[in-house]
Amino acid sequence: MRAVDIIQNKRDGQPLSAEEIHFFIENYTKGDLPDYQAAALLMAIYWRGMDRQETVTLTQAMAHSGKMMDLSGVIDYAVDKHSSGGVGDKTTLVVLPLVASMGVPVAKMSGRGLGFSGGTLDKLESIAGYNVNLTDEQFLDLAGKNGIVLSGQTGELAPADGKIYALRDVTATVPSKPLIASSIMSKKLASGANGMVLDVKWGNGAFMNTLEDARELAEIMVKIGADDGRDVIALLSDMNQPLGQAVGNAIEVVEAIDTLNGDGPADFRAHCLEVARYMVQLAGQGEKWTDANAVHQQLEAHLDNGQAMDKFRLMVAAQGGDLKMIDDPSLLPSAKIREDILATESGYAEQVIALEVAYAANALGAGREKKGDPVDHAVGVMVYVNVGDQISAGDRLFTIHANSEAQLAEAKAYLSQAVKVASSPVEPLPLFYGVIDSRTL
Ligand code: URA
Image 1 (cartoon, rainbow, N blue to C red):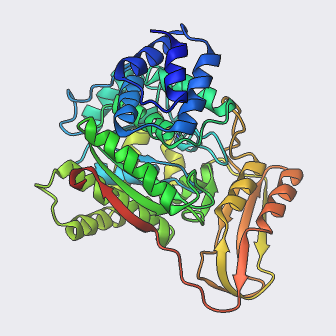
Image 2 (image 1 turned 90 degrees about the vertical axis):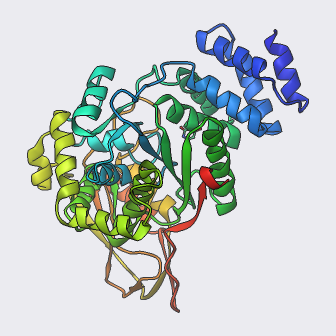
Image 3 (image 1 turned 180 degrees about the horizontal axis):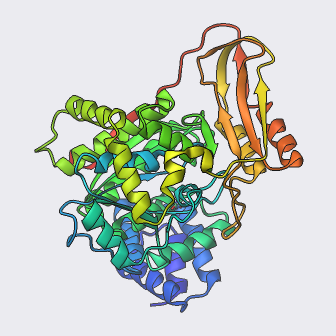
């Protein structure tokens, strides 16, 4: 088999065979195919697309390019979650302990952010001592012993994706749905989940800018899971405005702690309850937890009575994190400068543009431009307005947490564009727009 023939087939719109896909993935991962041929194939896939069979085969080949995590020795039914990424998305920090508090074990590998604000690992590293680099043995041990573990994914998990993603990034081939879906799902399949809830966001602060695109991507991912024998539920959720109030790293951890203590912004709490409910119901496999309302009520109780927080403390302590910071969040990293941004006009918030808030957080140093860049854990933006809110001139819209005057000025410029005010009432945005379930496809 020759790589050039595979490229030619895809260029001419032919579906690739399983042999061709495996040949390409295996040889590219080993370093036996040059980047220029891989890049040509990616561009051909970008233009020609892939059918269901090709996409599933590509995903499986990428998943099997490295180690396949086996959780079956420690967890009967492993349930995972994935978010397609958003502004202020600290959902994992709340949902994992919340689900674990229901007696459903959760063992999750998360990634670092490449973009506006940090990823889950960056947020967790705001907590002094928290170890995101567990060995497989430690990971499995904590999953079995505590029913909760949250760590980083190693390069051994779907290494083909690591190589291909880096190449896509520099060849303008990231925005291809089969490539995005196979990239995300290869890591999920390799991490050993039996079932997963995918939080697929759409909006100006998300990867997918329209609901139609998000739905299409979600359907591809659900089908990949179904064809590989996994249970997958995709929730289509909003990312036109930030989720919750905090956008940054340590300030997002503070908001997660507040939420686990029964407080926190209403939209974020509701979002977490919904994701957690689907995870619990998936793990219940239709037997124990058939009643969605009953599960929801019990999850609410666990946020309010400290049971979810107990699981969070257990996880942080087991991974070496400083519990004093959890019990007194003022000990988490904090920025030197805080400045409020006030409304200059009265009316109704018509838009709170997640992308502008994201640019502001990035300008402050909360995110990273390229892999390996450091993030500033202390900085970020607190957002106090939601679409639909009535506002008066002089109301506080944002608080900027900055570590330099120059970064503060840059963030202010972005935030000055972030809120659009209308003179008549505006409907609030929904949190969710639909559900796609592999079991009813
Ligand atoms: N996240 C991933 O892991 N891969 C993509 O291609 C896009 C988002």
